[in-house]
Amino acid sequence: MMLACDKVDLYEKSVAIPKHSWKSDFKPSVEFEIADTNSLYHVFVVIRHSDAYRYKNLWLNLISQPPGSKADTVRMNLILGNDEKGWLGKGMDDIYEHRILFNTEGLRFLRAGHHKFTLQQIMRDDQLDHVFNAGIRLEKIAK
Image (tube, rainbow, N blue to C red; front, top):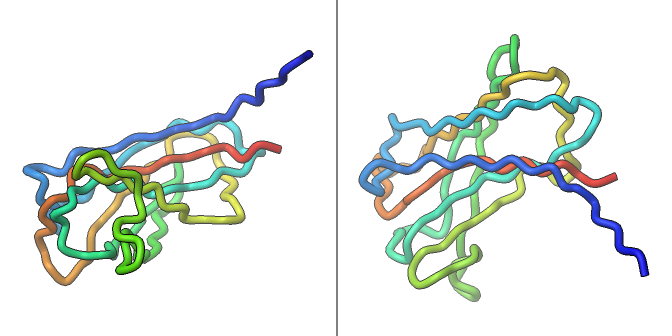
């Protein structure tokens, strides 16, 4: 019997939120070196919070900066939980992690090089307590 393993290219980086309290002027950024401009990638927003987080969602701006181009901003409403199921992310004790898919059809990076992603929380409350990390995950879509 022969088994084949497909290599899945994956990039994930998160930034710790100072004092677990995300203020609107703190904008976590991550950078990835992308060489493959022929493949499609899924882009996920990664959020870690405690059970004490007050809301079932998180409004944020996702700002992407390709090399040599101006930044593009997309407003997102991340659904983190609901009344029927509770928190939708994976949990351990009272910590929950969400990997929320941003693009179902996939994203093709037009330029190789450093791509920067910045997350800005835009909730009405300027300080979001009980948020531990925010980041980005890129997964190459297998052909």
